[in-house]
Image (cartoon, rainbow, N blue to C red; front, side, top):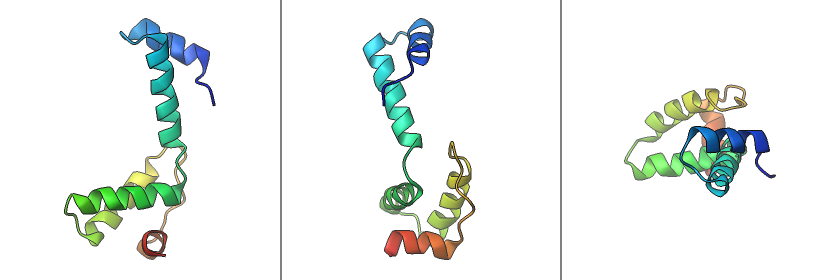
Length: 87
């Protein structure tokens, strides 16, 4: 999906980004926030695990992160989050 022209134009006017760079930034942000919930949960779990957090810490944090997404997912229980990560 191409970046909206008006948003790219706004970024070019308000930042030192070129039109190509602004379009790439918009595309990356749209892709990031368009990530399906299961993919987001698995990716964040792996990232936080690598940082040394425990599952209890991770699942509590994931619940809060999901509530802040562009289109927040319905609240997921720890059990639901575990099932996404571990099947």
